Image 1: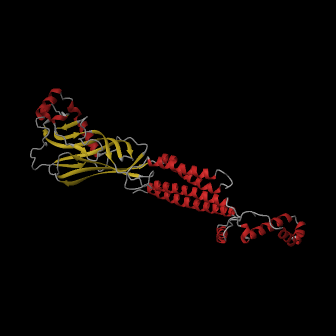
Image 2: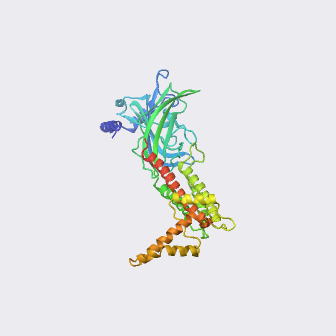
Image 3: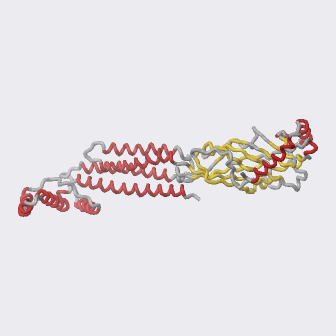
Length: 443
């Protein structure tokens, strides 16, 4: 328990024996004697040389919603406002040992506290329900409660692993620094009555005063700041995970055989799915903001890549169905495909045409002795298969007739699959690393 609360409890306990002597007549007489000053006048006897110090502590009860589209924080809370009223001082012995009274709020001076960054009508706080307590030594305490709808500049750079800072900017309406001084009672926001929010986690709070000048003079502003972090589990499972899975599945369009008639439809479906997820995520983000979300930029890049996949898929299909007789593969492209196959360790495709009879006869003549020697060891079949595969690979690299448009299409598909897979893993891995690092290493 805080020292201020301990002292208040001890003071209340010390007054228990004396409170039994209080009566309605004494309280009424006291209020009639003391509530004679106009409530619009500051309660000091020397207004020229005395500054009224108003201390405020903010007790946050709940965070109802942080609307990232409208950039609005909706919260509930109450204030503990204290000041000294020099006209509400009395001797308890003269009034039946009355130490504390609850005066009429309309007959006693109150600081016109207002929230400057409100998104509703700018008006004083606590006009609907007012509770004021005045003590015999002049100390006055006011407990206004309010539903706050304040502007909060939202930074969606790391959405949904974002951390937001929101402020409540309070000031006394119509008062300047020379007459009223506004100070925080506590260096942080009080959370004794706070109800935990399921979407946002509170990281830290702080309170400070700041004197600002304008045409009307210097005004003391009181700032209460809260730092909250989003709980990203739901959005990560419902938004980010489907996007990553969809991007990964989209790359496998290059593994679908060109003979299948659904290859182009597969790529178009993935493109449309990205468009749907793009509109879904944008609903969570501000309509106008100074920064862009990393995940939105990443999703836009994936959308562009998905469109590129469609174009490359169309190109691959056109190459696959190109006539080899009318349009033979150019020598330059032949050399390029062979270099790519060797660089990526891609095995050349199965021989597209049957070898000449003379070549097969020569091959059989060269391997007769080996076959006879291997027959006794039971490896004739393996030698035949190895020799045939070797001859086919040599022909695939050297014989121009073996380079067909189907081979170009298949080699291109393998190259594109590996390239886009590595690109997706590298980019998304970097994006997730940056966002998670900011989420768990915030200072």
